[in-house]
Length: 216
Ligand SMILES: CC(C)(COP(=O)(O)OP(=O)(O)OC[C@H]1O[C@@H](n2cnc3c(N)ncnc32)[C@H](O)[C@@H]1OP(=O)(O)O)[C@@H](O)C(=O)NCCC(=O)NCCS
Image (tube, rainbow, N blue to C red):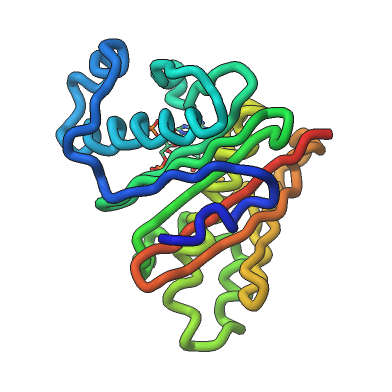
C-alpha cells in the first residue's frame, strides 16, 4: 500500500512492509510475545522493527517498544504513533507530538465482511446509507467502515483511555474525496475527540484508514 502517508494531514513518517521473518527484538519485547503463536510474534516483531526505523528518521532514540498492560503502544517521550497489521502486512506511522497529538492507523485485507460482522459493526444509519450506495461499491464499504472505526478508536484512546463499541461510533464516508468523519454517539465523550475526521485509501488488496488529532 503506497499511499499510507497521505492518510495523515501533518508531518508523519510511515514504514510498511510484508511481515519481516528475521525481525529482531529487544529482550523485554521477546518476553512479551514469548507465549504467542508464530503469526502474532511475526507481526509484533515486524511492527517493532518498522517503528524503530520510522522513529529513527525523526531523530528519536533507539528504544524497546513494549506495549502497555492494556496492549496500547508506548512511544518514546515526545513522539506518537500507531501500528496496524493484516494477513501478511504491517504498517506503522509516527510523528513528533509537537506536530500531531495522536494518530490512528488501520489496515485491513480488502474483503467482504460476513453478515454477522456487519450486524456487529454497522449502525442502523450506516446500514441504510450502505443500501443507497452504488452496487459496485457496496461490497467494500462494510470493511471500510470497520477499518475507519478501528483507526478512530486507536487515535482517541491515548486521550480518553476509554473503550468504545462499534455501535458507539457512527461514520460518514465521502467516497469521492477519500475522507470520513467519525462521531461518537455516546453522551459525555471528551469533546476533543468526540468527532474526528480521517482519510482512507482502497487498493486492490487492502483498505487503509488514518485519523490524526492535531495539537490545540
Ligand atoms: C486496538 C484494536 C482496535 C486493534 O485493532 P485490530 O484490527 O485488532 O489490530 P491491528 O493489527 O489493526 O492493530 C494492532 C495494534 O493496535 C495497537 N493497539 C492496541 N490497543 C490499542 C489501543 N487501545 N489504542 C491504540 N492502539 C492500540 C497496538 O499497537 C497493536 O499492535 P501491536 O500489538 O503490534 O503493538 C482492537 O484490538 C481493539 O482493542 N478493539 C476494541 C475496541 C474496538 O474495536 N471498538 C470498535 C471501534 S470504535
